[in-house]
Length: 201
Image 1: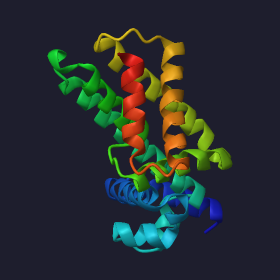
Image 2: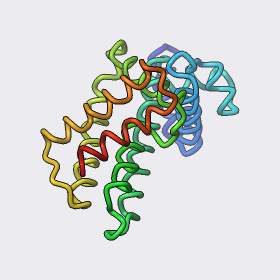
Image 3: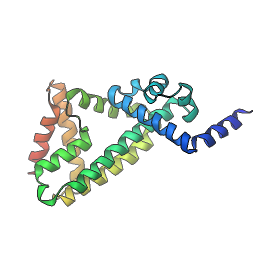
Image 4: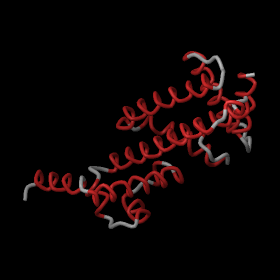
């Protein structure tokens, strides 16, 4: 069989329910490893072991390690966006005070884990995407969807935040976190929360 035939066969197998389940399991495992250890943690063997599948499955269902990393980033990014939309839907109008909005916004910008190491890993991943051209198109899409969700959160919570102000608020959070990390502040999320709360009050 030619290599083209093998690729077509793999694509057909991956589109079956069993193939889709295996591909999804590998993407989920890769996403977990990405969050726990950054890009360097996403390796064929580690992903296969985490998913409980044969090592060859990673190269069978994904064209390359870059393809697998891309699937991991998309999986985690879309899960965070879905969680943010659920939180927004559950947030009662009377509870949309500044503190509730700040926590929801920070969950989307910094992740739900408040520990310093988790925040550091997140920013390392964000910076690391700049060195991975194959991730840029996906990151542009996810970034646009994130900004749409943040805008909806502010609008529905009664805050006057247009596109320009939204960018300033995101930059405020990023700057607060980076400055806190440089100063070896053990709780960068609290620093960002305080500054964001002041900006919205």
